[in-house]
Length: 200
Image 1 (cartoon, rainbow, N blue to C red):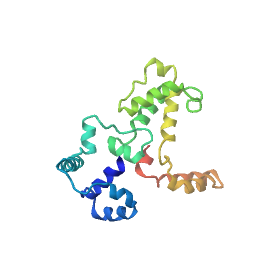
Image 2 (cartoon, rainbow, N blue to C red):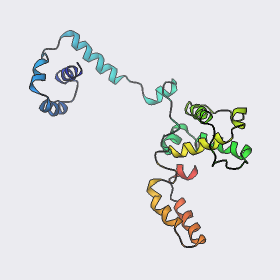
Image 3 (cartoon, one colour):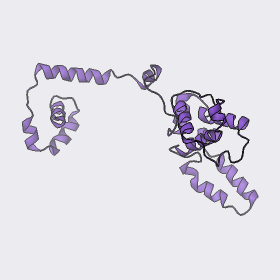
Image 4 (cartoon, one colour):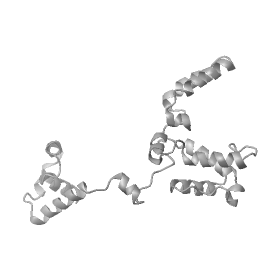
């Protein structure tokens, strides 16, 4: 079973000695007595294989180059996503805003929701590191799905566009007495946004 394998790996020195000391104190005596002490040639080969396997794992960059690992777009930290993609602004926002500026002069572009299946189709394409053709009839006829996709992107950011760290300052700025004071305070807080959030 798994516990026996784990204890065996502890005994043959697969883990650092500090870990062995910590874990040995917590393992019941009945379990440790059931694990055989000597290491056979077969087990020695297994340990060598496991060590080699752990050391030879490819880097994240190599996995990306081979197309095995894909970076997430939705639900990924904005700064991390821009660093990995090499863009100044997320491609999903750039494509959607250009489309909306060209075709989205309709009532409630961001208020009304698009068809869920169209939104999911677009999301999947962006998450697959493709840039979908937004001029397809399916999207032209359902312009609201593009606006909904933008809202979905912002909603799934782990740290919101206006950031948790500046939430209190934005709240204070919005509560200012006059429109002029409010505008000055909001402008001041916007200048404090991290660069990826400021550009987006």
